[in-house]
Length: 342
Image 1 (spheres, rainbow, N blue to C red):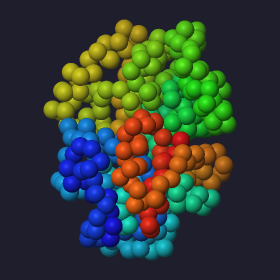
Image 2: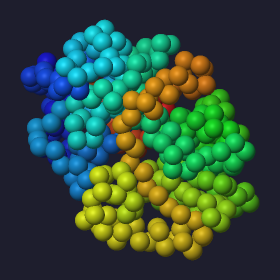
Image 3: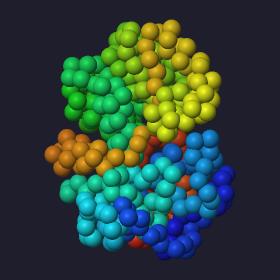
Image 4: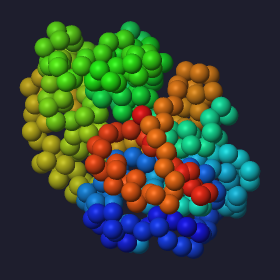
């Protein structure tokens, strides 16, 4: 089968489209004919070697973290899926493998696709949708009537986060440029701050929770607009000790490293009287099933930024690297597509 393989860390030259053996399903795996795969910033960061402190699988490795496709074989212990099911999934961090004509995933990490989506749109959901859901529902505990601030609402995670926060009953404020304002308002955002001309910290508003998708100066300004005793969850700044304990398998040595590198951010949060948490989302078939239900009910819309032919995936990765947007992109895979949402 054809697959996009990382042979060494660095630039696009270390990633090649080549023929590799098809994967063999483990007892709890489903084998999927991939019809589309999602592109995200984590893909180029992994390719560049920026995640080696956290993930260090053996190379060469088939890249890719999320896909949509059709089940073509199942392991002996699989109970939830049958051959012919249309599924989507975020594969386990240590496995990858989505940028290929076939991919294996544990049945607990997959769900049936929303019936009203095609493969391309479905492939743009798992990573960004799960990140938004787990941050807002599980980490921030968003409740009806709360005021939630989401930075970068026009990106891939942001487009899901706005809608999920509204589904949870929150009043949502986000940042966007004038170009992105129409998009975030169409997704239900209540208030929009133009980050190109307004200082977030000078708006006079106070929020019950914050979801940071930008980091840097934007995160610094967010510390000034949160109510005392509240919390910011980030997926764009620096990981802190709980990241290693809760999200990365209880790795205490890594927790100590994260304690050091995040000391400044945690001190800033402490001075503001709030807590700070960096989140690595986790694959979850049950969470994906919930997202599929919301999509089928019309409560969650998927915005695909653009698609690319699989044969152009090398250029795609370079484009993501230069764009810096947190959008999901998708690509069909047979020949596959890569898709990016947002």
